[in-house]
Each structure stands twice: as structure tokens, then as C-alpha cells.
Length: 224
Image (cartoon, rainbow, N blue to C red; front, side, top):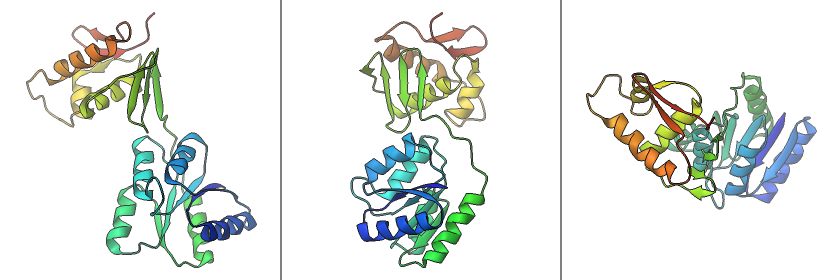
């Protein structure tokens, strides 16, 4: 397997790196949280082994950001933080397994092999594009024609849903259920008002991308 080890302790990293190589895995090491996040999101890996206490970005935030961006690479937390609350926090952040330091290398390999046998989820794009509009799900940023567009959290979620369904009809009911988590009609213009504000922000940098399908819903698509 191709494994990225994100561990800032050089001695520990070298020990694990060489051990993985001896077991036939292709291993690489990152010693910084933000660098590890970038590599985990931009390269293809079969597994991540992640320390909790990292410079620049801690392991929990790193994994939470990956999961929020749709990266489902299996994660094994390897850390000295071994309390029950620590383990629960790691699993809730998106970790698949949790091993506490100090550890037996045989157990580490057994856990790596066990995670490797699990069926992998299909990777999800972390950058969405429609025409000159670009959404970076990891950085939580939106740009159009090179200009940064500031969105509120709900506007970001609305735009993300539309972009994931680009060129498709998205109904008001679909938006209420998937953006607002409503499974009933609140009898307000909440969808329409958010669409209007989103259009206003996007159109400052170009022509209309969000189109109203009268009586049906909305569609985001590139100009013909």
C-alpha cells in the first residue's frame, strides 16, 4: 500500500517509515500538519497514519478538514493522547482507527493490514468548477475569474450543492432537505432569498450561472 505518515517526531517517523518499507509498503513522511493536509488531499494514498500533536495544524483538524472536503482515505491515528475522550474525539473527527504510543510495531502493522482490507470509498472531488467559478472544499474558498467571493456558511453549502449537481435540475425540496436539513416545507421564501443573494455575489464577476427553471427549481451551468 501507499501510505503517508504525518508525524513530527523524526525518530518515530524514521522507525515507522523503515518498518513499513520492510513490510513491502510504499511510505512517505510529512512532519508538518499543513503540509500533510496538502499532500493527503492532492496525492493518491491508500492510507494515512496521523499524529495528533503536529506543528501548523493538529491531527484532529487535519482529518476533519479532509473529511469535510470529501477525502475518505483510511486514517489511523497514532498518538500519545490515549484517554477515552481523546480516542472518541479522534474517531468523531473522521479517524478509522486509533493506536496509542508507545506501541508494538506488530500491532501497528496488524491495524494497517486490517484497514487495508476494508473496501475503499470512492474519492470525491475537493475542487468544484463551473465555467470560471471555482470552489475549494478544503480551503472553504470560492473564486470567480480570479476574484475571491466571500460567502456565509449557508451560502457556501447552497453553492456547493448546486455545483455538485451542475447541469442538473435541483428542486426547492432538494435544497430544503440537503442544505437546510428541513424535511417539511417551512412556508417561507428562505430558498429564494438565499439564491438571490448568491446570484448577486456571483454576478459581480461575470454573467449569470444560476438559472431558474420556472415551476421546477434551479440549475447552475456554464454559458452556452
